[in-house]
Amino acid sequence: MARIASRAPTEDEFVELVHAAWPSLYRTGLLLVGDHALAEDLVQAALAKTYAHWHQVREPAAARAYARRIMVNTATSWFRRRSFGERPTEQVPDRPAAGARDEHDDRLRRLDMVAALAQLPPRQRAVVVLRFYEDLSVRETAAALGVTDGTVKSQTSLALERLRAILGDEVALPAEGPATYSTTGGPHA
Amino acid sequence: MPEQLTDLLHASVDDVPVPHPSAYDILGRGRSLRRRRRVATGVVAAVAVLAAGLGGALVHDLGTPDSRDNQEIADQPTGGAVEAYDQSGAWVVGDQLTIGQKTVTLPQPPTYLAQTSAGVVAQLRNGPGDSTFVLVRPDGTQTTLTIPSTTFTINGDLSAPRVAWVDDGDDVLDLHVWDVEADREVGNGTIPAPGTSPANSGQFLTPAFLDGDSAYVGADDGTGHRVRWATGAVSTIEHAPFSVRNDVLAWQAKDGWAFDDAAGNRQLGVLPREFHNPLLSPDGRFIAVARTNETEDRIGFATVSGGEFTEIPGLRIVSVWTPGGRMLSTSEDGTAVRICTTSGDCETRAVDPAGLADNGILLADVLNVG
Image 1 (spheres, helix red, strand yellow):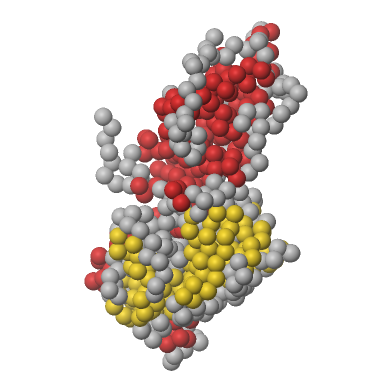
Image 2 (cartoon, chains in turn purple, cyan):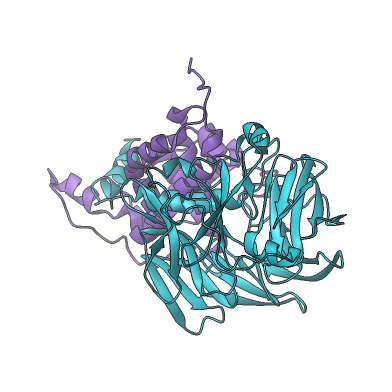
């Protein structure tokens, strides 16, 4: 059982969090926004907001998950306020191969998933990143996005269907159960 | 292969070069957010004032006050409550509010003070979503204002008797401008803000920077809006404001800070990213700013036009401007108020030690968040 600290963490502990969480948050951010500069700005914004609440943190070990949630919410806010719509392309761009061990791996490694994700609507993109990159459960993803479990399932199903169309049969994507469409998904559904 | 998508995602980004984070940049950005964050439910301001909003914990070893310490400010006025307020500003220890040379007792300790040209507006928090706002004039007289009690917090205009705030609406921000002498709303505006909802209010304050006949409000995407509050006319500005005074707008650029004329027609100056929290003086000529190296923040002034940084030793990072253009801060140990001119001459004002034990010093225009 986690022990709850009796004091707020220090600023030195926040700096430690920044250095420890930055690489993984940056990569997640890159998948979410599809641009290095935007990803850097996104992570900075998320960590700054985390700092704004730092005095309320009583368990520094949970702070990284808290920062990730803030980052997803910030990205969601950006999606609403900026032109982050999907970017249709004729085909998925390749990226340079890096140490592929065989032809199949080489093909997979050359698939630019960042570009593929960019073709998804923002909500579907966030669901894919959280579930299949961050390895969150449906419930954890729903909590992170502020939507219902059913919305996560339906968005996952739609996202996978679209990714199949984008990536082709060469890539086996996970099967998703029957979509459950929420009729009361709230403002974020 | 159910995990193949996971593998693909990891293969796409796990080997990308990751830029090195600047923890101090993030801290600076976080401090500015924290400074303006709405006072949360159940805030106990008393425990916060010594650490005060901007993160004084990073201030180390600023050095001992120099020989100018405790000198009388050369042009300190000897008379006139208004002049004394202009030059000394306002602060509070517990329920004892000092404005200029006058100290008065408030009904309860305030959680926030907003300076205006007519005096300081004290926010008295009665409970969640319930505040009373009291105007304390330089002569010490008090008037309870009819600003809606649900208003989270306000921003004052150092050069006019007005305060402003924004409420979250459905995809909009509602700006309100209040004349504290007439005690009535004198202007408003509706600012487009897609994604905003009253249901999500209470997280972060969107500050409204009042400057004459305009109010400036930033947007999450880094742009902003200028509202001519008398007419409600809203126009988009290129950069989200960090501070606005006398038609000069400070904004955070990618590699530091930039200072433009508020119309956005020309740049007046820049500061590199080692500087933080640049607050414009009432006349828009100077910046009170923290300069950071690897281990510490140094507090001082710079000119908007790019002049040399002048460090003021012995100040905490929480520093604001008085209406007359002096820097109002506290001593390094947080037990006294220090007021400094832009030439670096400082005056130290003692506060009641008994009040300090329980409350600490809350400077005007500093929002403590507990």
